[in-house]
View: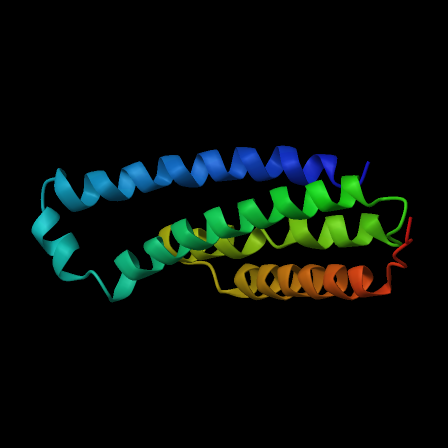
Length: 136
């Protein structure tokens, strides 16, 4: 069912990226060599890691919200399945950032995820404009 997986995967993804935030706190405050980590706050891997953390939680939240809206308005929305799939595909963006930082992969997953999430949000917005409001 369109929406249910967005909510479930959104919460799980949010939990994982929240836990990743604890790793970032450890690296900043407690890890050996933390001074070097702090000095590179706005450049390089440190900056990319923070981008992944922030976008991971944002895109997880967007999936939760999109999932709820798809479930709540499923009777009035067409193509809910496609919007759901695009929003889930959007999670490739923060995962792709981590793949760049830790595995040295090219940014293709970042681009695919960013385009998919943007498309899902715009598509859902247009779909809501098309809903006919009934006056009761």
